[in-house]
Amino acid sequence: MNTADSRRLSRSLENLGFVTAANVEDADVIVLNTCVVRQSAEDKALGRLSSLKSLKQQNPQLVIGLMGCLVGVHGNLALQKRFPWVDVFSAPSDPQPLLDFLTNRQQADRAQSWRMNIDRMLDEEFGVAVPGEQRAVSENLPVVLGCSHACAYCVIPLKRGRERSRDALRIVRDARTFAGQGVSEIVLLGQIVDRYGLDLPGSPRLPQLLSSLSEIPQIKRLRFLTSHPNWMSNELIASVAELPKVMPHIEVPVQAGDDGVLLAMRRGYTNQQYRELVVKLRERIPGVSIATDIIVGFPGETETAFQKTYELLADLRLDVAHLARYSPRPGTYSARELADDVPAEEKMHRFRLLENLQESILKELNQGLLGEVVPVLFEYRVKGRWYGRTPTNRIVFVDSAEDLTGQERQVKITWTGPWSLVGSLEPSL
Ligand code: SAM
Image (cartoon, rainbow, N blue to C red):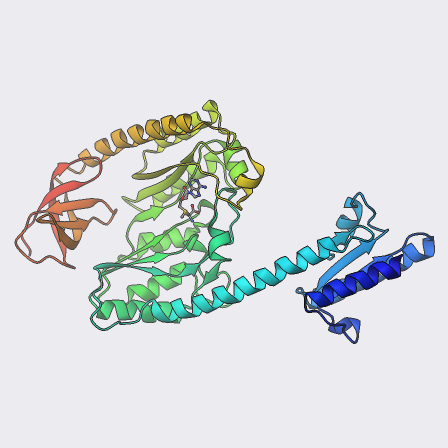
């Protein structure tokens, strides 16, 4: 029976394009088809399994399958624990789990090489001067592509692949090209931008990248987003505080205020830890503005759990809250495993409560700026007025006959609303 199973498996593997390896060290896939009818057969199988460990250590891409009576028909958790270097466990006569594993692996490899091709193309194009192309005053520059964090709700890792940092020299080259094309502000992008460089041995990290980019004379302002509460290092906070060109504005999503919901979202921090981070940011970066993202109606978010989010936002009085109602994205953990159990009207209700709260907070915060003089970097004219932003990323409109494109000017704030400010140019010195 075992011999017949092994033959069947070999034929199926050949159909997938595999050929027999001359010896075990050359194999990409090793399957141990086991018999436990006698103790000696079982001992032999366990001995062989242990000896495969070193092969797996030398080549992590090696696929090891364990099939047959040792696994049994009910699965075998004890074996899985004891032999973590085995990738696939299959019942006797059942090659399917191994075939599925290998097919998925082949698809992932194809997707990965396809992504790498796209990356190479993008990498070439990000900062390249295209004749006749106009650059904006503020340009985005991707520095981390993809994402390897497993937030339960988020489809990005599935769509954009694992996290890849771009080469620092290329980023600086792109930024210099931008600078030569009239760009004054660069916004460095990454899903968890604070992790920049972690995947490239010997690469500079975000603080060093920010200080290299600060040396480009034409670049007046640098920003980066998005941060993750667990990856905002003290060194990064210090660079924001110390590098004059790095703007005091941090985008650090909390997503929810309830610890149970945060755990289910797999965010990796608690309400209290987020609050402490906000206190630290405010202590160390004078005048910092903080933006957050929030999802309402995540599976299992009760009325009480939502209240925690509401209180967090009310207590912290952050400068921006990007609000979203939870929607299950196909393929994500939450879409597969958690019931979307907050009704649509209730999600909308919670969304509106936070929206109203944030609007009243911003009205008050912005009123504090009335009569203040702030440096504004102007970007373009819209409906006859100049559009610019303060260091803390607040939008300011100004009437002026001058061409203010790319100019950083002192502006006195004369009107404030929750979403924007109006001001007048101070005389230049
Ligand atoms: N990388 C960032 C992070 O870690 O939070 C931002 C990623 S995502 C492009 C921007 C925002 O979309 C998230 O912060 C989250 O609030 C929201 N979002 C993501 N998946 C969602 C979903 N399934 N339903 C509702 N909002 C979602």
